[in-house]
Amino acid sequence: MGTYVITGGASGIGAAIKLQLQSEGHRVMVVDLQQADIVADLATAEGRSNAVIAIEEAAGGDLAGLVACAGVGSHIPNPELITAVNYFGAVELVEGLRQLLADNRASVLLVSSNSAPMPTNPDFVQALLSGDENAACAIAANMESQPVYSGSKQALTRWMRHNTQSYAAQGIRMNAIGPGYTKTPLSAAVEDNPTYGEAIKHFIATIPIGRPGLPQDMADAASFLLGDKSGFICGAMLFVDGGHDAMLRPDEF
Ligand SMILES: NC(=O)c1ccc[n+]([C@@H]2O[C@H](COP(=O)([O-])OP(=O)(O)OC[C@H]3O[C@@H](n4cnc5c(N)ncnc54)[C@H](O)[C@@H]3O)[C@@H](O)[C@H]2O)c1
Image (tube, rainbow, N blue to C red; front, side, top):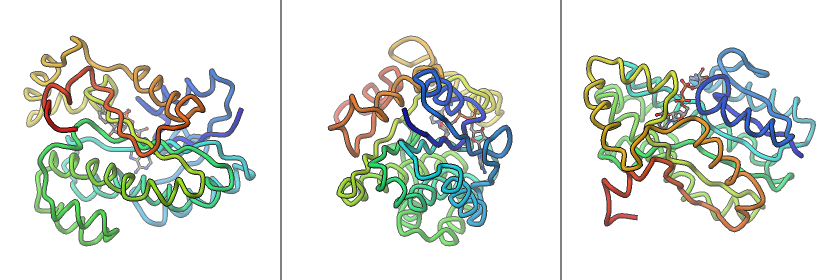
C-alpha cells in the first residue's frame, strides 16, 4: 500500500479515482482548489510550485503514484486558463515531483481526453511543448476555447510520449487515459453551454457502446495503469471512450 497524489480529486473523475485507490487500501492526498488535503491553484506557476513543496512535505518520502487530473472544460470562456491548468498544471507537477517519483519507482497517470487527436492550432501545441507559457497563452487568446482544450490535451499526451524514455530510465512509468464523454460536473456544464451543448448531445448519441462514460469507468482504468498489473505498459494513451476514437479515426492509431 502506498501514497498517491491526485490533482483535481475533489470532483468528478478525480474523486472517483480517489475512492477507488482508497478502497484498495492506499493513502490518497488530493490537491485542488477546495475540499483538498493540499489547497493549490494550479493555474499559476506559484500555485504549482507551492503544491510541489506541500506534496513533498506531506508525502514523507513515500509516493507510489501521481494522477494529474485537474482540468477545466471547453465551456470556460478563458483560453489562457484552459492552457494554464490543463497543460502546465499537469506537466509542472510531474516535473517538480520527478526526483520523489524516481526515488519510489512510481507511476504517473495523466488525464488527457479523446479530444486530444482533434484538429487544433499546431503553433499552440508547439508553444506548449516548448514550455513557453506566455507564448502559448498569447496564441490561445486568439483561438476558440474548444481547440485550446483539445490542443492542451494533445500537447499533454505528446509531452508524455516525448518524455517516456527518460522517465522510464529512472523507474517512472507514465501513461495516460483519454476519457470520452463522462458524466461529471464539468461535462454537465459543457452540455448546458449554448455554444457547445447541441454538438455535445449529438456526440453522446454516437458513442458506439451506447452510453456515456461514468467516473468509475475512468477509475477502473486508472487503477490498472497505476498498479503492478500494467508493469510493462509505459507511454501509452488508453482511450476510455466507449469506442468513440476508433469510430472517428479508424485508420489512425
Ligand atoms: N468529463 C469528461 O467528459 C471528460 C472528458 C475528457 C477528459 N476529461 C478530463 O478529466 C479531468 C477531470 O474532469 P472532470 O470531468 O472530472 O471535471 P470536474 O470539474 O468534475 O473536476 C475537475 C477538478 O479539477 C479542479 N481544478 C480545476 N481548476 C483547478 C486549478 N486551477 N487548480 C486546482 N484544481 C483545479 C476542480 O476544482 C475539480 O475538482 C479534466 O482534466 C478533464 O479535462 C473529462
